[in-house]
Image 1: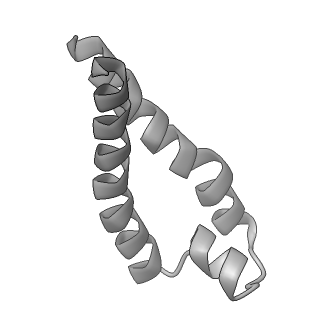
Image 2: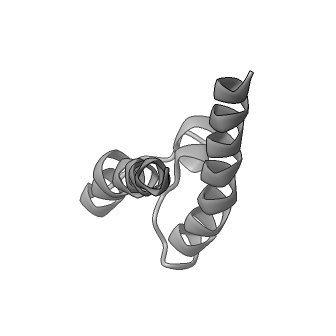
Length: 70
């Protein structure tokens, strides 16, 4: 049960971080996953770097630092 709660908290933290990351990406003109999947927007090189490298690194780092805290 505690393992389930740990992953539930990880999920909530990722969600809480994802919202401002998406808002910032939109403000600087990057295509987000939502835009790409729902609106079928084409992506440029910077959009691809953001979606396939930066975005996963942000969330991977969050989980890494949460696990280090234990």
